[in-house]
Image (cartoon, rainbow, N blue to C red; front, side, top):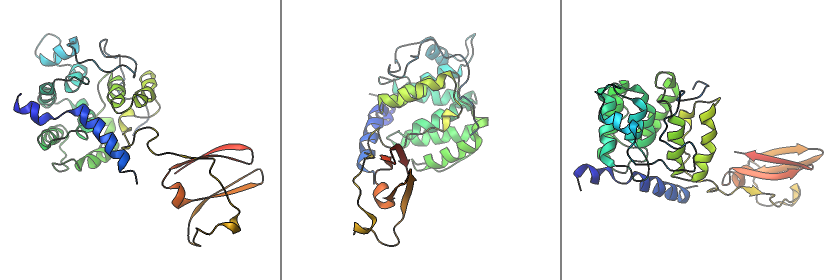
Length: 266
């Protein structure tokens, strides 16, 4: 096993492990991203995983001096192609992106290095980002937040390759298939920049919502302080107060007030 293979770690395992850990730690411009015709070989549905098999796009990415020249979409799948991805391909894709000054790789590099489990690859990715953008935010995983904030302000200059939505849909489905299903329709057109969608660190239903919580009359409760904040709802003559310190742990309340179903999100 090569040194690079050892240091790459297992990206997929890292994604899944990150999802599991996150559950235990729970406490810009509008318009479609990656416009253009999607590649033929990657799947068009989110439920199918990206294939690691050889494809014309990956072959083209390995041979940027051929008649077709360097191909951003091909390099995107060379960067990451699925559960059985060849680790050395990622290193090659990073080098090719820098050599070809391919700024469309910037959103993908930022997206991926959040899940890299070793410092060597994080440093390599940050160096590539610095070369492609002229920006530097440190050499550790904590830099991811700064990179995301920066990308949000500069998204127009760093649009991803054609087929990006399909790539991201399949990438996110490694955390949970429902993430892929949620993103898949964006390939047909989206009113928001899909690049700016980021995993919040919790799998679907990882934070249970409050469903039809029991209520007591205002004068009967004995667990609130006068300074406690509440979410007040009044519908059709019925009134509810949802305490912030209770809602905070659930982030969502689904209830019926005044005969009307409501959803309160925080």
